Image (tube, chains in turn purple, brown):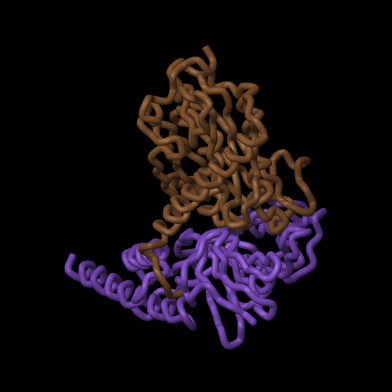
Length: 238
Length: 242
């Protein structure tokens, strides 16, 4: 017997009683179980599926926690003998070993990693592994990964990245088709924007900031589209 | 002078016109600081406290790291301008003690095991002090933690109960604390009814203690509603759609 005290897509805060019952399926670490009762531990949106007795909670705030397979954008903050240390906006710094970046064998006696990437470089990378006992490991040996050489990187809240992508990528596709820019979203809250012109780049940055501040409002995709079209019109007139 | 000063008027109200079981006017706001991961401002009458939360983040110095959970660091501090006589900004014995009890009051609600090897830093700054700063501080800190998106069992709210002229009064201010017979700060997780902070200064009989605790719980439940409202307000403009 499962009983739900919240509606689907309702905003909850820590301590809110969400459901009661033995057969409730919880798919997030952000729900606390005490006896047969389920409580929210974080401010977020609940997703309730009464038929399947499923309960999920999407956080509205919070740090980025790496998961294997995530594409992230990191900044190099230190260079070791055989590895780089990257800030990926997570509570833990990430490690990129030379073997996961270079195609040929690397010998630290003869070579210096700074010749390839140095402090301050932005890299698009993929999380190889992370289990909280060890810092996350990254790789850039895949298609579309590597150093960022042009365009801008926009910092947003990590919890807002799903909104920049949108349902099945709707927001992202709209942004790209409206402006002709190339956009890569790092799930850790960094967005890389490459545009044909500086002016378009500025418009996209403003649009992303708008998405960040107005996330979780309805009809956002259409409003952002209107915003971009208006800005483009203004650009043509000047 | 203790106990002799008249703090309850003839009509049974207190010096500031409140009934014995009445809170001071409360104002709470979430997300007041841009640089912090989470922040909150709590005002209880003339007491004004701001809290900022940073983290989970890497620990410096490194040797404090715990392999299985995050550490919680807490600093309660009174601004030099918070009192009528300038307070030295250096941490006093009292502030170090309050930092500790507030930290322990929060440790039991925060799920530190979700972020091993990191730290969660809580800064509580008293801007204006008029009694009940530690309880206002813990109330603000729990709001700031929720604002930072740190998982916790429940919000924590706190209030002090005092005894003045033989009468138990809720949410005592500076004067009532100074000239009253007892001061008992209490903080609780309202959803679970668990106490996370309890101190007692002065003398209460066992019966009075029981009654004082009930009075505190009543006040805490009211504060909890304010807390929930403050947090919900932040998201009231942002509804639905993921």
